[in-house]
Image (cartoon, rainbow, N blue to C red; front, top):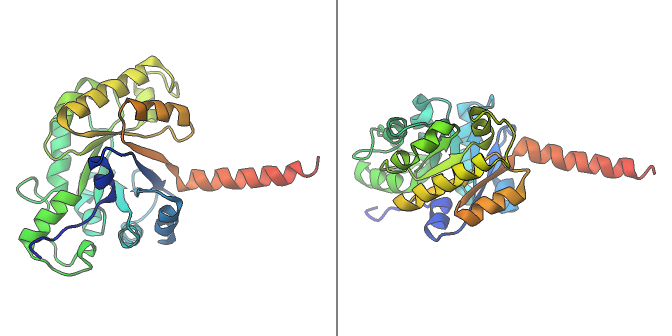
Amino acid sequence: MSDLVVRNPVKERLARGEVASSMTVRLTRSIEIAQLAKSAGFDSLYVDLEHSSLSLETTSAICCAALACGIAPFVRVPQLELVQRVLDGGALGIIVPDVRNAAQAREAVRAAKYPPLGERGFATALPHFQYRSPGAKQQYAALNEATMVVVQFESAECIERADEIFAVHGVDMVLFGTNDMTADMGIPGDYENPRVRDAYARAIAAAKKHGKHVGVGGLGGRPKLTAEFVKMGARYVSTGTDLGFLLSAATEQARQVRALET
């Protein structure tokens, strides 16, 4: 297994300069959500452990299903102590909320990457290798290459430190948490505010300088604004949650039935 490779469809798209899409899993507790995401055309999904009651067991099952159907499973972790467990359980990346400086970014890399990049501990028979044990040297190289470290910008402070955060070796992408960022700026929900555009522009410039990427988050209901940021250079779009998609489609169907009465 000297040439062992673990595929990450998101990394592959980003390397080609293409836009990668993602949906968030916050409600669904069965593995079918991975196949639904694949059939819908998403490149990835991320299980949100920050804002849900999903268990590690459920998270691992969904991640394994995503691996099997060829989309990249990520997990948003509320604490770095969970990083190794979700990665060993099948995730191909972590999303770390509210990273404000380079020191916090380095801690995320330390938790997610094997030596020499980080301090992730060795575990055998991982789902990424169909539970085979390729050996530490091959495993370290393959998963260090495939595993993405995504940090979230959710404050005004992180924009001021964008250059130093993107400079951290091992950080692949910044994902904006636009809702929390507007709240921190004192303009909650004002997504069209020039300060939001400026924050994206500054982050995208820093990302390009360091050969990294920016993701759009929290703007699932604002496709024109999302398109604007993609045109500026963002290359990953978090489109919305399973809960939001279900409620939106169900609401529309109910509306159509009510309209038949008129």
